[in-house]
Length: 286
Image (tube, rainbow, N blue to C red; front, side, top):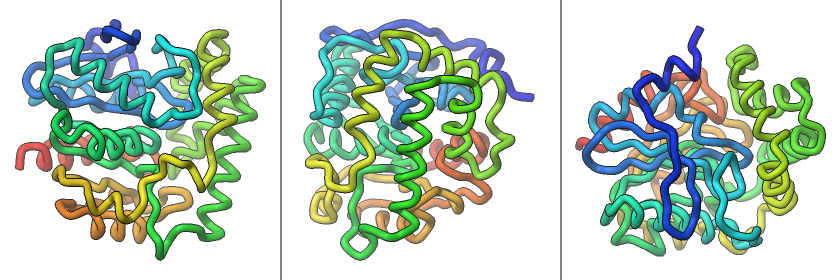
């Protein structure tokens, strides 16, 4: 069985940033590749990918603001721009002019916002089952509303009462097969949700998430303005927005390609790490 600890042997864990204190799991040399988790997550969302990707890139998997151990500013409802400011601060702190960005769910939203508002700092982007994108033909469906409702209920239950049961149920939402949630992952997520500083931040995050009308949503018009080469990485069991959403998303972004991971849910990088890393590496090296 995979272990987060074993998967990360050879990586370093520490803090980067000038304005902010960003926790980073880091490995490799060369072009920076910043990996960003989803809502309520932490850097270990990419624990199965970091070392393999670091064979070709300087990989930095981070805790987004108000998640994990990252800190440095009071909570703001302008969360997406704040996360982008955190990423730019991270790049400044390591002396990088630019970086490739991969974002899963919320992290993909951050990657798109960064690409649009700081195009000179962003290389290629990977949108891994991204949140935040709106397509006029596929904006609201019963499946999407139900997925958001389920995620909201599980998220609030886990953060308000972080038992192993509520945390496991929240993590199972991410997977095509619930058994892929390991006991180690439950323990780690429960630790973060019980940690007072993290919990206080995430209460605010959760209470201001899961809306379909965010002022920072990425509209179809904005998607058409993304100039960076883009990989839309989707899965066949992504809750709420299945493969058709991913395909249409890739068709709206001018320089985008699409890949769908079979037998995976909202965390294809965890469920199918070898395929994820192969596809991402090939895209970045093309």
